[in-house]
Image (cartoon, rainbow, N blue to C red):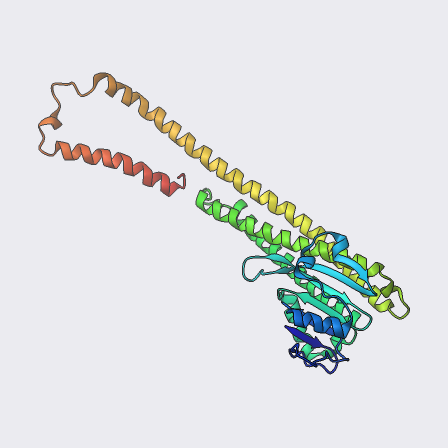
Length: 327
């Protein structure tokens, strides 16, 4: 799908047909899962090469950040799929020319969707290609900050559940609930890893963009200051994500340690039960039931009574241990 944005553009879909041209006043050209015909249309009208999906997936810095024929090629790993519960880092390539910005993507991250809606209402946000790029990066960084705040809130919730048990009843957290907390810790750590990947990728992109000759031209001082400000913001996000990652790792270790304590307590309980019942079992093993006067032998309900006692002796401790949270 091919869309164009900028002053005088409505953001509508442009069909790659014979004789179709991209509007000259379009400053932002967005390619979403482009067909070969759409790629050829952009290459013909803008004069740049559109990278393939395989080229965008490469992780070498030299393949992600480079300049070719006067155009800057910047590939960014962008956070995607958080709302669906499967966070990933999808590559998006920005091709920046003198007067055009081309984005190539095979996913629609939330910042892209949000920014395109804003540009539709306020075309001045895409007045220039460079301004469009910095504004778009600003939205992506804001999204990262929001997600880091969400991870921080999840960390506080899990930490409260693990370390603030019910003191009044002195009851420990059951193992099954600890296992659920471990799953939540794992999901938080997975999301944080994707956030950090996006933040580091953004920091590299901003460093490359800030060092490019384009931003050191006369009249681009405002854009250069904006890029430096964004780089400082991303650096803070990387540091904070590292801090949260260490805390989440501590929560995981704490939860596993509590499970180990619960298991040791259960083994200790069973050991004490064995010690308590061993002497009666020993005496019963020596003497058996070899006594002449055993009233229950001639009792009509003696056999059902014995079966009931055996059943009760097995079920009673189980429910008691279960209620105490030991098993």
